[in-house]
Length: 208
Ligand SMILES: [Mg+2]
Image (cartoon, rainbow, N blue to C red; front, side, top):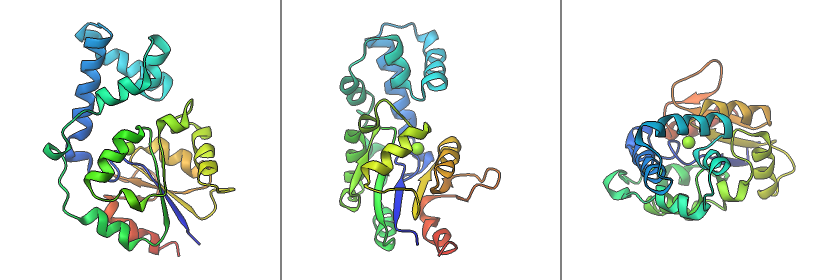
């Protein structure tokens, strides 16, 4: 029986098309340019290096510079959500329709997660927010991030657990770790997938 769902946050609980990711990306660029005094032309290659070698921009920057995690995270997530996201009540309806225990499992930080969840009025649906600060020094898709998430949830294994994420590498690792792992987005290979989060209840019916 499926009893617990681990939800990614960004581009999973809200649409990839919302523009919020781009807005945060712009803030990351400003941080690198203004706080680290790096030339505008080098920003994109530094960000690629960070993601490819360290899993996230923050972890990569920390390997190169002295960075205060909280200062970085509050700076890059300082975007006006009301200009970007629309709350039509559908996310709340979706979570109401799912009887499972629910957790957030995100490479973002808890302050950003709470802002988004509060914006949609759904914070209380989740009994844990497992964020990048909780997971340090790991991030998805590192296997230990998943093991740590299960441990925080107080679960001995991923049996009966669902994991939903928009990044194929995260979903493939979730599958290796024993979660029923579902991709939000265009189908890739034989990975179970849904075009958007609102299709989750229908897909889960096929597993019960
Ligand atoms: Mg995501």
